Image (tube, rainbow, N blue to C red):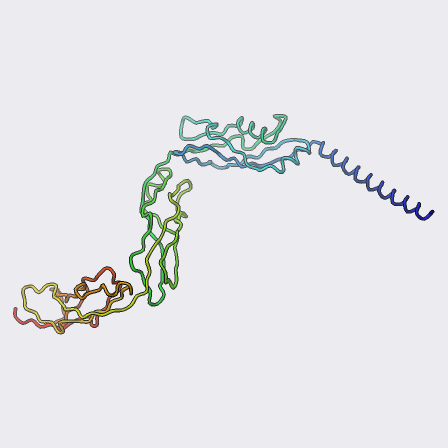
Length: 318
């Protein structure tokens, strides 16, 4: 019994000591939180409700630092607050001399006092006011150019030209910033070993645009039909593009033309779809040969090549 009473006594002392330690710690924390402290806090000023026809820039800064005294309880509470203060645009003061607006000292102090729940006006802010410049916005439509590097898998190719939709974009901003802009470009897309149709959204490159200039839309859709190709060949007669009334005989009179075409349209290609001409010119220094050129081919054919690039000729009479 004596041993058990001793253990009980020891446990009671430990519990009493821990309770006393906890109690004194809580009291000490409350005393500290009840004390007054001088501190500072920085806020980012964000304008809200800006009219759609205005672009507003802060001249130098968009942050305000407040130096104030408060009790520890409020100091802890304020430390968890977001450091952003929204200011309605219509609360700014319009300066008559130019297109500038002032966020006044009184307005800043009132919002900070409300935000921090301060009970006194005895605090200091820097800067005491912020100057904003407002520019009226203009807009215009300009063309977009795709930056791309597309390589197809062997045996595959584009059926048609790549399309960009929309082809015109609207830029919006201060007139001085958009007047000189005549064209926009996409971010460069790089595609390798393409075997299927191309269809993807590409962002506009806005890296060179002035701050406050926006582009609508911000992306364009890039599309292109891709198919497997095969090679075909036809024997095409050679024609003269200009004989100047002379009788000229060509040797040979026909050449083989090789072409690449999508498999799906291979049977649609005819000899009459092609024209091969022997080019004559007054400054032709070659006395025995004329160069050949493919001057007509169907739209479904992507590439052509000739079995020979020139023909011999003789003038029968002059």
